[in-house]
Length: 283
Image 1: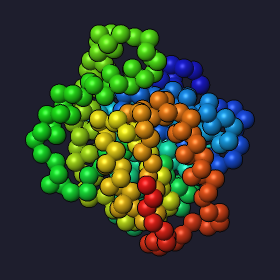
Image 2: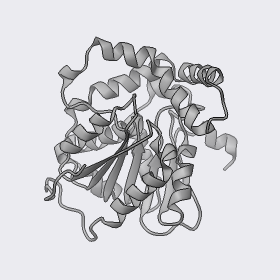
Image 3: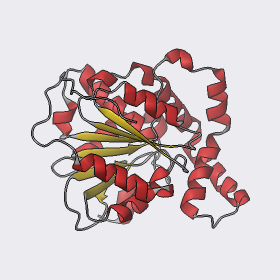
Image 4: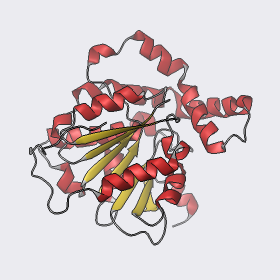
């Protein structure tokens, strides 16, 4: 398949590195990023895992009309379907972490078992946007996420440029990325966020690891802690000295946390739908 053809496809799943062994991980990037956001993690993980990554419609270069016509959780499902044999562990960042939970919720509401359907043994949710109480949203949240939306993009550019770009250039690029996302893209993001209080978190029956950055001003770490407290089998790690893109800023610690989590996963059959694993949330 040509590169031009791939760029036109909403979802492109490929093996992220060659010669990986062990459990199969699917990596899902956030809004206005791409699969390259996982490169530092992949380098640290070495060949510990069989790594697959998806380029999703909301990637940096974007896919026309994703934000006003597309089934966003459905595209997450498409990515899951495209991993040969299914992904043992799904690692999802930011917007895609919330969309992954939305997909699982939709499947559960329809009486289906998404964990068996997609072969999922565990989840790693990175910098998730989550609130348990709809009353916790107020007008100030709309203003902050709307008017400071470009700052999330600027932070990503800062991290991935490794200090090579000055602040003025970073901001200029961040405004361009924001404009590519557009009003519809921002609205889809914020609507997904607003709906998180109604997610069926108690029905997520697989082990979960939540990772957050101590300095994350976008998806503040307290939201990951709150989400972990509402999952039946979850632990949370807040990594110091980093923000929203902890997989790059603290790649070694990020990879170590995932390796520890995945290697400790139980073997054998997944628990039946509705079963609540015994265990506590760990911070």
